[in-house]
Length: 415
Image (tube, rainbow, N blue to C red):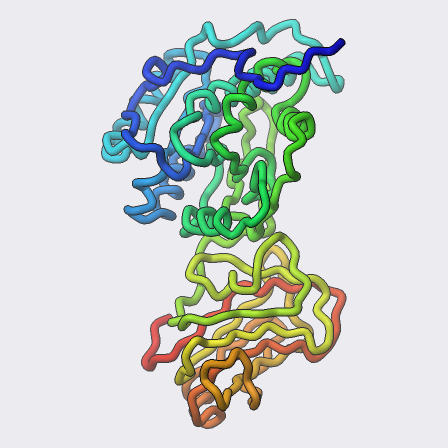
């Protein structure tokens, strides 16, 4: 009979954290999330600094206390690793001392044979060596990161982050009411993939067991099937954007870009506390509240139909002084409403999540934008309002990205 190995950690020894740590310090308490970034020196350019700076600039001081950034120096040449290590220490000394950034490296003895391997998929010997080493790189990174935090986020060394991504990820995890194995915060490659800490050691062992058989993204999929884990969740818009052109595989260009990515908001309204409903057919696992929240996040809906709407119910009636709604995206400029209006509603009973009377206050233009300002509103709306509605007047085949909703209840207002 076939013997099933239920615990893959029996097949692998874990990386020794103290030996692997080339700079930084281990934190005393388990954090919320570890961000793993493997890096090698490319012949022509480096994106690593942009990646690190983007993470730091996209997080708050309190968020940086509950995350750890692990940078794995994956070059096999010890001189190259030492040059990179010293450069990173000189640039990020404060963050390294605090424990936010840990720099690690693997001993040469950790790697199995990487030459004369099977040529699966008709790949060249160079490509087989590259992807086989990559499997071992990830195995070492996963082993090291195991136990550091509740969750593990995989990034690459050529991405930028969306503002407030830690809070977005934390809130999305809390919103799940069913078991999950992984959450994808980007559709591209091995970027923005979130795993639970309990899977890291087994994934590492799986990578090492089949490193010369399959690319790492295939192994991830096989692992999920073999362990009968739930399908990955996809949350859009993406929280990470690929910026690299030069792949870590010599001579390979990789100009991939995430079409559903928002780095930061364009407008910063007061956005009073509100409850938001919609009968739009959503895509990408997001909810209608996303374009109203402080973090950049849009709501993507499929083929809006006549009388479909999105309604913002304010917890308390407000004096509306400005309303901006942005639809579409530079990567998808046609994902706008063909014909949609914006209405303000009043309610005779302030506590009810309904509005009895509606007044049109504007229409979205052909660019997908409406900006209704105080000078116009004061002649249209003469009382406090309880609701704002986006109402579809004409059915369409195009999908729509509702990118931002900003509401002001003060004047003068900030942009």
